[in-house]
Every structure is written in C-alpha cells, then in structure tokens.
Length: 291
Length: 230
Image 1: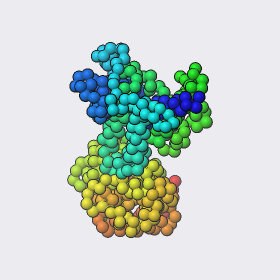
Image 2: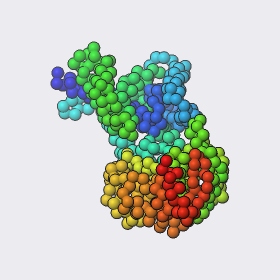
Image 3: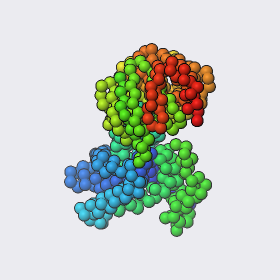
Image 4: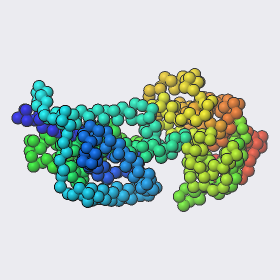
C-alpha cells in the first residue's frame, strides 16, 4: 500500500502540474482583466493540437513545439484581446462569459472540423522515454519532466510578478489601473500582454499534456472544470494560491481516489464546497474589499 | 500653461461639472475652493483625463488635451495626486516610488527622494500602505515628482494630517513653486490654501464663479468660511 500511495502522490503531482499551470494563467488574467476566461481550456487544447500539427505538417518534434506552440498561443491571445475582449470591458461581466464561452465552442468545433472527433496519439521526446528510479519510487521519466517544468515555470512566473520591476507594473495595473495610467503607463498594452501570457501558459500546458493524454478537441473542456474549482479553492486572482492549490488538489484527489475510488470525480468539488464554507474568498484570497 | 474654458464633465449619465474655467501660469499655485461636492476633485480628474467624459476645452502648453487619455496627458507633463493618495498596497514603498516611468529629464532621483525623506528609504521594503498617513502623503507627492511634471494636481494634501506634517507639505509646495512647477490645489483647509496659493477659484455647484487673489480671500474670509462650512 505504501508504494502504491507514493505512486498515487506522483500521479497527483502530474495532474497538479497541469492544474497549476492552467489556474496560474486564469489567475493572472482574472487579476488584470477581471474576467473569467472560459476559453482557457480551449487554449490548452489548441496548444496540444498546435504541437500535433507542427509534427504532422512540418515534421517538428516535441522540443521545438514546446517553445513554438506557447508563442503561437500567446499571439492568438493577443489577437483575441485586441479584437474582441477589449470591446467588452465597460459592459456587464456576463458579456465576457458569453464571448469566452462562445469562443470555446467555436474553437472546439473548428478543430473537430479539421481533425475529427477521435483522439490522436502524440509521441513525447525519445530522450525522456522509459522510467526513472528515484530510489523510493519508479516513475515514467516524461511525467517527472512535466512536474519539473510546471514547478519551474510557476516559480519563475511568481518571481517575475512578485519580485521584479516588471511585476510591480503588473501588480499596479491590477490594483489600480486608473492611477497607474495617470502616471503615464500604457495600461492597455499591459492588459494585452498579460492576456497573451496567460494563454501562452495554457498552450504550454497543452503541449506538455499531448504525449500523456490523447489529443482530442474536448480535452480542454474536461480539465477546465476542475481547474475552475482549483481557482476558487486557491482564491480568485491569487498567483501563489493558484500554484500551491493546483498541486495540492492534484495530490489530494489522487490519494482520495486511491482510498475510495468512487469519490474520484467529486472530491475536488467537495474540497471546493468545504473551503467556501470556511473561507469564502479561498485559501489565499484576500477578504472582500481588501484589494 | 494651462487654460481651461467651460469644462463640463459627466459621471455616466449625471452631469457633474457645468462650466469650470481657470488658467494657471508657470510657477503659479491656483487653489480651488468650495464646498464638499462642489466639483473640485472632479475638476482635477477631468484635467488629468481620469474622468474621460468631458467637454469644453483644456489647453496644456498650447496643446488641446480635452480628448486625450490620462497616460498621454501624463507624458506631456501633468501629474495628479488623488485625494485618497492611492498608495499601492501590493507594492513596496520603493516599488511605489519607482512605478511612474521617467518621462522627462529633471525628475527627482531616488537619492534626492531619500535625502529629503529618509523615512522612505528606511521603509523601502515595506508595503506602501503600512506607513502613516503623513508618510503616505509624502510618498504620493514625491512619487509623481520622479516623472518631472510641470503641472501638479494636488487633491486635499492636508486632509487628516497632523499640523506639523501639514506645515511640511506647505513648505514643500512652496519650494516646488519656486522651482517653476505650476500647481492646481484642491483644499478644504483655507489656511493651507492661503499660505501656498496665488489665486483662488471659487467653485459652486460644478461652476467656477469667481477668481480671487489671496488678499481678496483674506478680506472676505468670514463670508467664505461661512459658505464653505455649510
């Protein structure tokens, strides 16, 4: 049982790696734009499909795709922000939800039109094939790599936002865009950049997921529901909260479903309900009005 | 350097400024006096472009800025210190200081800021809002000076502060004025306004009704105080 539990913890960390990357992107976007990006799951799916297509059409392997796909997704995010989201900031939040939800449907069906509904296999990097013996556990090398990349990217993002001058501008735009703009900062440019960065993170998660899960048009819509729960548990817009909660939820759900399999699909929502009862603003969220 | 003609402003559908006119020359301090809700802060916000829905004409250094966004107005050399000071709680004191981009040469360097207000250096790594009200007001003012503005919009700088600090801020405004900075000041504290301003624009119900010299305000002090305190 002990060995199985350790394996389950590692499986949880792999799931958590994706939750963390996705909820981090949602958190930076929510902080800056005050919108809940329903299209985030579609961006993740597009990341995986971009990697797949780069391989099919141009013969590019995993490594170049790992860099190219997030950049393309970031540019796609920039395009969406500039041409669509931008027009809705002064309207009721429901319009953002409608737009991003509608985009999800359009993107999903668009991909389905080109590739069909069935999942496509995507091979990971040969260098990371096989398993690695960590002494106390033997685990697939590629999945360890996914955990490491997610930790590194999340850590780097947190450092960038929390400790650098660049991050200070982002925090200022988030806290009080009106005053920040009055200092001569082009806030709208930063809003675009942050949205692009968030979608790039989703794209990165998609590429990382491609070799593990099957690449299909609905892969994002399944994952994004859990990710929204993670965001709520961590606290809307909290950077650190989304990272820590992402991994935490991944591990807790993995352990829970090992102990009592029927609970696997509901555990995250039970956690969410529990946290909301005790701390309505989430584990890392500031109290209402504390912004 | 600043010419405002018949400025009107709107918050959504409500018409809040009905015609404010004023002019400010280089190195001049002009105060806006009037009751709470007369439209003084709104005037500053409209000048800065923070309140985008405005009509009339605002000419700053010969350029029509009536339809510009606040970041462009800032780049032309206008700076605004809002009434609530707007110190960022998610930024340290130092990050607050370094937030405004250096738009022109001649702005206050960090060394100069620290020399004038050593406390800001001491508290550099603290969250901006962890300081006292007076320290926050100092920070709010020097923060915008880093960008070397030529016109400063100061909203209620003495509000809620101890007399010693108010003195200090008055001195600072006078020094800045000596260096050629123009200031539009909103003040409830008439003594503070009399001390630092050259001219006073009386604002009543969103309109500028008259411009008074400091002498005129002094002779009519009782009448004005009665008007302001209602």
